Structures are given as structure tokens and as C-alpha cells.
Image (cartoon, rainbow, N blue to C red; front, side, top):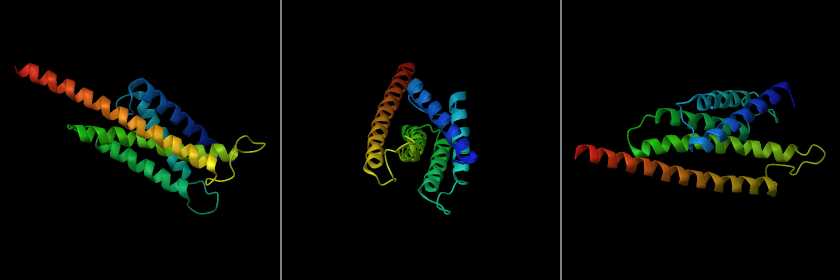
Length: 167
């Protein structure tokens, strides 16, 4: 692995750790606290460095995923201050999608490189990689569902409070 590859991996792993911390602590990744902001910066650095890493000499799926992560960050940013439920939901889901998308190449690279003596998979098409991504998709869908419920509860409490203050 090149120095750039090592840097890319370390920054990406730290970003994913911060994302997990934020998701566990608050159930979402936003733009309002230091952990989230560092996650966003590190994710952007990881995406930028991924554009400089070419295994085959040309752009590949990892580059497309990095582009999608940047798009999701943008959507999350521009919908973050929405005053309606669906805008908030889009922001939260977009930020969670950055983690989901980042984990796809992470799973692939991990399973095709480790253990060093005999990696668990020989390509992204290997069943262990494909099944791991499917499990990741299930966890992402579950997380989105839980975020939806949480936002709905907060919206209901806000509406109740507004109603009580008007009466």
C-alpha cells in the first residue's frame, strides 16, 4: 500500500469511528457539533484522496462511491435547516448514507486484503463481500427506520408543545 493509501485508510477509519460515535450518542450525524464537523472534514479528505488512488489506472467503483458520498454530504448540508419533517429527514438520511456508502469500499478492501496470509475474498464479486454488503444494507435500512421514528416523535412533541402554548 502506498503512503497515500495508508493516509487515506487512516483518515477514513477515524472518520467512520467518529460517525459511529455520533450515531450511537445522538442517533444521527449533523452539522452542529465538533464530532460531526470533524467527521465531515475527514470524509471529504478521504473522498479527495480516493480520487488519487487508481488500482487499474482508471476510475473505478470506489471513485463513483466517493462522488456519491460528496453529493450526499451536499444534500445533507443544504437540507439541514429545513423547517419541515421531510427536509429534516432527507438531511439525516443523506448523512447516514455517507457512512453506508463509505463502508462499501471499506468492506471490500478489508475482506480482499485481510488476513494478509490469505484474504477472505479475492474480489468484490466474492460471496463474502457481496453478503457483507447486503447485511450492511439491512443495518442501513434499520437505521433509517429508527431515525424516521425519532424525527416523528420529536415532531409530535413540538406540535403538542405548540398547541399547548396557543391554548
